[in-house]
Length: 178
Image (cartoon, rainbow, N blue to C red; front, side):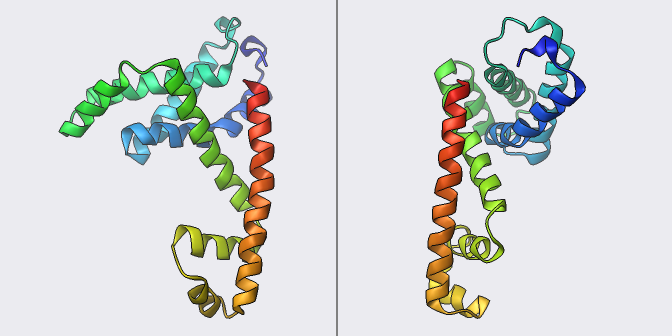
């Protein structure tokens, strides 16, 4: 998709496909949810304003992530609150394209996992969240949900299987676009 051909619908689709992952990406630098959302939004606004002059860009997604990283560096410089912020800004400044690509892959993977989790059947999702996110033991989950331990195992393995299939599709689609 070439930027100078963006119409409202195409841009809206691109925005919805990449906004959440970009917020996660920027949050890793800012450690502030509001700032991460603001930076991600500003990057999309900037992309929209520059859409006619970006026709030589090979990957809009890469362009967007580099712009977000640069905006994060600027934000960190402007918000010197702690020593750690300064160290983070200094470590980001010499960042290379390879690092941005690695961060982009990590953040899109997290976004893909979260999206795939939302599509899990209700009970599978409950078991997955309780076990892997909240760290509860399978016996605790069985008691909490008032189901047998065997059913908990079934939901656990079914959720893992469904997530693996969803993520395989995500990875294949991601690497096709690079």
